[in-house]
Length: 198
Ligand SMILES: [Fe+2]
Figure 1: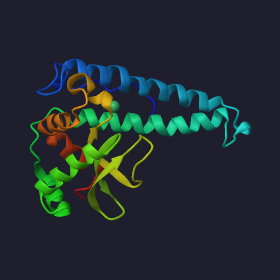
Figure 2 (figure 1 turned 30 degrees about the vertical axis):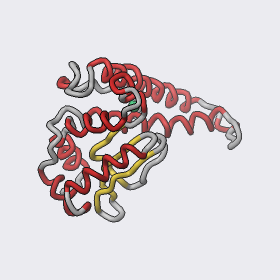
Figure 3 (figure 1 turned 45 degrees about the vertical axis):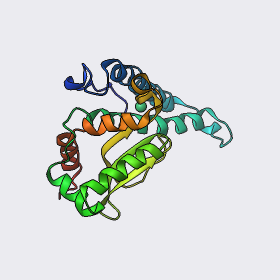
C-alpha cells in the first residue's frame, strides 16, 4: 500500500471554480502527502517491530497497527477525493442509471449526498456495497469508520481542512462547490474498474 503520493490532477493545479489552488495544494501537498509518508514509515517499522510486546492498553506494535488502518484509509479516501474533482458536476453514464435505480432518482441521491455532507464529521462516500449489490452514501466520522465490502465511487472530504481556507465555517457552500466540480467521468471509470458494471 505504501508508496509515492499520486500527483494532483493537472486540471486541479490552478484551482477550480469554488476551490482555490492554495486550498487544494495545502490539502494535497501537505495533508494527503503526509499520510502517504507516514504509512510508509509505519509499514517499515512494523516489519521489524517486537511482536511479543503486543498489549491492548499500550504497546508500540499496537499503536503501529492502529495507525496502519488509519493511514491506509486516509490515503485511499484522499486519492478518491482528489480523483472525484475536476469535472462538470453532471451525473452521467451507467453510474447515473445505477444511482437512479438505487436512490429512486438522481435528484434524491443528490439531496442525500449533500445532507450526509452536512451531517458527517469526516467523509461522505458514494459506494457500491457488494453484500447487497447496490449503491449507498456512507458517512464516516473518522478514517477508520466505513462499510466493509463496499467500493468507493465518489468521495467528499468534509473535514474542515478541506475547505476552511476558502469558506471558513460555511460548509454548505463548499459542498455546493464540490458538487459543481464532481468528475463523473472519473467516477464512472472508478465504477468500471472495480467491476460494478459486470
Ligand atoms: Fe482531507
